[in-house]
Length: 523
Image (cartoon, rainbow, N blue to C red; front, side, top):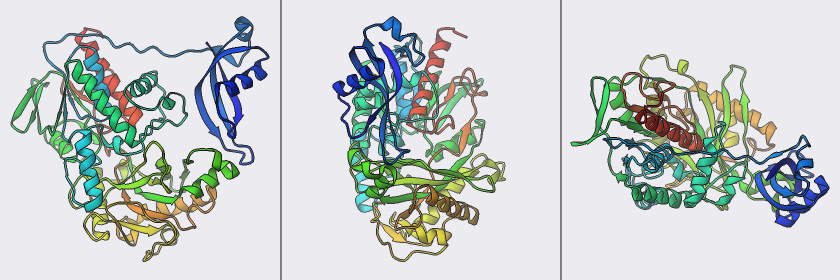
């Protein structure tokens, strides 16, 4: 097939094969026999003429002549091959989030029968535990939005867009579709699965790993690592020892007790930049109108991405925007309130929400302790718990009041979606002055990007503290192993090498590839 980009079609039209073929034939002046969408995005820069912007793969007459055009190439898709290997031990993967399940799947397909250890519970049990927390405020510290089958990304929007450029991305997308994700993620410029679909997809991946001889064991928290002569020999889950000479550590960004265990054993690690802020909610209808104008009725729920740099060099930006979604309680420790955003595949909730974050750098935390940023996150969460009055209710504030520097004692307009509930508060009791001022200044600038964003009745819910890991566990650039412990592979977002579902999944694949290469004697 051939490929051509920049095909523009009004969003008022349905993207049927006939419509696509007609648009191509008009542009090319020749008969098109087959067409499919390779990439689809929405161009809303001109609110009076919102368009689909498409890259299409097609078959047509006069192929040799068409290939002389500069805007046409042969359709290409990278080939990703899983290599086989043999070993006298079974690799261990710690964590069953995106990095863990993609690493585990690769190792299983390679014939290595991995043992995967997840401290949380299976997806169905975890779903029941989180729903109970949302209803009652009763927290299970081992089964929640952070811990359990699928990782933290399962209880979010399932967004797959990423800033990395890697040929493995296509393999990840096709794998997710194979096991239950919607096919549209293969061509959407901003692919998302949705929590409801991602839960089933991850369960199917687990079943595939098990069918190949792998094991996925739940309620197995790794409490120690066994090493001999600077080489890994296995892991302990309490008193239970699981031997292995290759351990993938894909623990996610919230396993704080595990980070402390690694620090005590002398695992090399360092502070990493991260962010802190809150969730901002607006009516989805307002965001649709601001983004799409009069074309809003023809399109799914709109998203946005906002970012500004302040005079002192600090950045403030939106993150993990959930159209038609909900703000959820994402605590995993007692006595701390954490927020996150979640939406189902349909994105049909009344509100939109996004994390609004101020960037924090290692120099903001002068201590030499690499865990200092993690402890700072915990302190913000503790302050939010107190400001919410306990019971895991979250503090909330009118967005205009926050920008003006005053507390809120009444929420008007937007109804907060956070469960188990909210209490009005003054965010000056939660955030240090340098973060509060940065967020307020950033929101003022956002109002010039989306008119009314920060001056209306939007509501803020605090705190958003787990957007990324504040720690990077050191690893060799080539082998991806720890420089001090052979066979130990720090991996994914928690280890500081990814920033979302897709980049974590790709890092999981890369790590599994390195294990197979080592077993096969490759350099």
